[in-house]
Image (cartoon, rainbow, N blue to C red):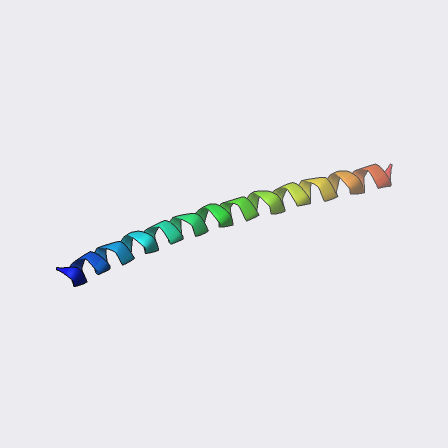
Length: 48
């Protein structure tokens, strides 16, 4: 019974960790997109 509890707890912790990683990757993607937009805007301003 104790082994089963440890297994279930480990699976839950692993699922939470993977969920956190997915949110972090999504956030990084948004940050990179915003950086590209800002860089393009700066290039347009300099080109004028």
